[in-house]
Length: 346
Image 1 (cartoon, rainbow, N blue to C red):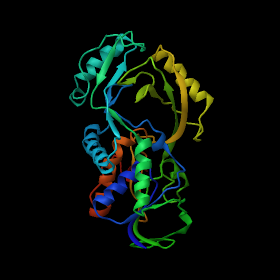
Image 2 (cartoon, rainbow, N blue to C red):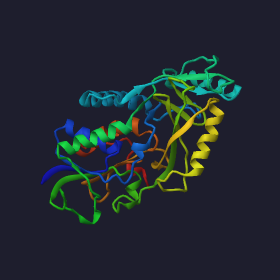
Image 3 (cartoon, rainbow, N blue to C red):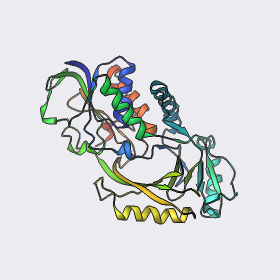
Image 4 (cartoon, rainbow, N blue to C red):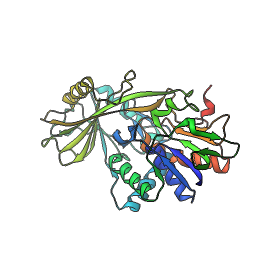
């Protein structure tokens, strides 16, 4: 079989790059063995404002301009609902939060998203003595629905290979690669934390931050917005809410822990004051980078090998834009942004 691309990994990065190849009528296959599921477990939230510090997310406007139509296209393609636009309310814990909010609202890059007022009304079930700030342009993508839907689609058009990619079997030539009976022009690795097993790119400074979430059921909470405090509380419908997330830099396993649940419940009880029941707990390792920028680009020696990784907690926003940039870099020799190019790593 002769094709244009081999893609390794089918999280948000692999999905977005696959969709770009389909748009460009390129031939490809995707290797996916379900060994890493950070995109699947993720909350799928997108938000252009870092609410811990009231600062803008890097390149947020450009990312949203690309990602919103991208998910709309997928909704039309599969006649499914993936993207839910939902307002975010940030709980203030002090007068200082209020002052910082107003200062941030004066910045042009943030003023398009942050409402310049404090909302003091009581919301049943929510602890907010100092009121709320409201952020627009936010929402969440149902990755638990999107990724299996896309996987099934690729399988149906014979582009999915459900097995672990064996790096030892990859034979690299000047203008092509060979893997078993497949000859391809290029390979793009989208493996998330699995990068550490990749002999071609495992020298890159990808770290893993384990994140745990719980899903709760509460008939008395009844909020229709994303609540952000020390945690997020995301309404999923039918009185269920996803609550997250922890950050653990030492544990690199995908196993839910008692400590993770206790941490989330402790923060949750400071945020809401109504009864709830925990109905699910999940964990996965996010692919993160110290400088908080993705890892995109070609291998310095093997120009037909490339990487699309390090999306961290913002994969929903980043993946469509990064896929576009990487494709244009590989096919049209367009320069990558310096902030994402792996050439920045010394």
